Image (cartoon, rainbow over all chains, first blue to last red; front, side, top):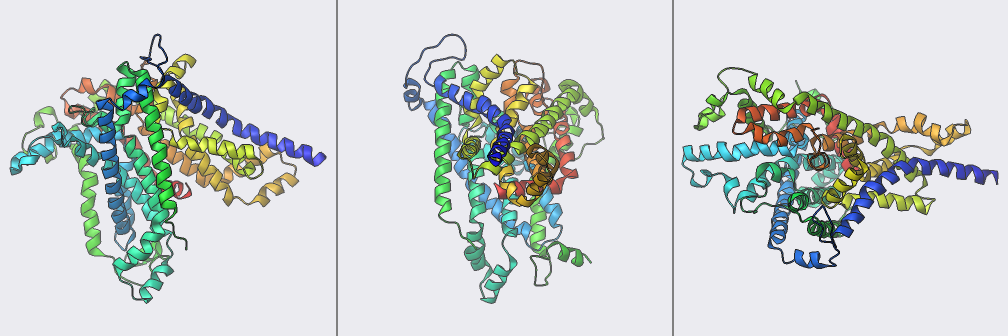
Length: 293
Length: 292
């Protein structure tokens, strides 16, 4: 009896400890999430009165070419970006983890892009794309470099991609390095004794043991790339001709100022579902492939 | 030679004695240009005057003819640098302190009771699932909510950051509990210490490595974030360092020298922080990713 009472007092303390987090989370995550869901069924413009319109917004989403284009751009950007980021950062991690001089300094330098804000990085690259590279193109008479990449409707997304990848590589490299360090040296020794070549060892030993880290990196970079915002804001503002309008940017632009509050809430709900589905699928696929030592 | 030092660094990895790979070192050093070139451009443009901006490539890449900090002084005046810096420092600092207290406490309570009580397990998954909620869906309702509550200001931004980083941080803290032996708490309890006291005097200090990780991840995220202050504080005069760059775009006009001086000023604090605690930052991030 006495013990029981003491236990419950203990549990009460634990509940009190978790309570501030729980309340804050409910008020500032769950409440707005539900509000967003509710607004997505209305024709609210963000102010004044509004009516419930059922699933109209969701039906309209599939017919709105601007929304369609933003999904196309965002997915093109996220897929190409995630692959590029992971290939580059894996190569870089292998390089930075092998026997080289100035190892710590080099790691320190390669990590710098990660600590800088996306907006300012975007502004700096915007200048390089608009002035430095065209000047270089004119001087060397390289035709396709003479005009700013950001002004081209078909190529502007590559400009955004370069900046996004430039920043994202740093973080993934660090994660891959910690993955490489987690592989015990005797595994390599064993394969060396067996006479395995370097490429063979990498493919058959390093890569399978890195799968958990590849999973983390793919999920992290897909999610970050799908939510691209800062770079768009500073590089293109969605242009030219809305060719680089990401989903987040469109929701911000038209939902906040464009009088499409309800409609963009529906867009955000769609986006949320898409992100959950992608994350779950990614985890399902990769969890089957994990190797244990 | 450096060999002994090198050996010490990777005594775990390199069992076979061998030389550093010079070719690879050179390639990696050359690769640094991709990282450093944009920063170099930003710095030299910030130091030049508008009349020094030429149209030939050699001129564009060269160092300024004279060293002058005029652009920086002017940029500080135009963007009200010290105010934005103070705001950014306050927002990031308070967010970190609140996160360490609120998130570690929740992570501890959840981790302790998850196995025995279904309720705590539910709370854990409820909070951690917040990782999948994109800011885009919360953004517009939050603008209304914070306005109604009268916290469409710095305080509101801080509260929102505490909520946004909660899923990741709670997960990290809960995971870290495995490293703390149960016997320690039991011993404290036998000595008559309450759960509350045991936590603050014994457990909280023991979670120091995780505090470092959480602080670094939260700091980098909040310091560089533009979107939250942009939408939440849009009605007020207060700006953060990144937000000031966005707001003063029009004022910079085509004066790139002034704009770049301002960008450099905005980057300096985080670069200093990075140079001082580089090891902690990189270690913290690797730690967070592996545990997560």
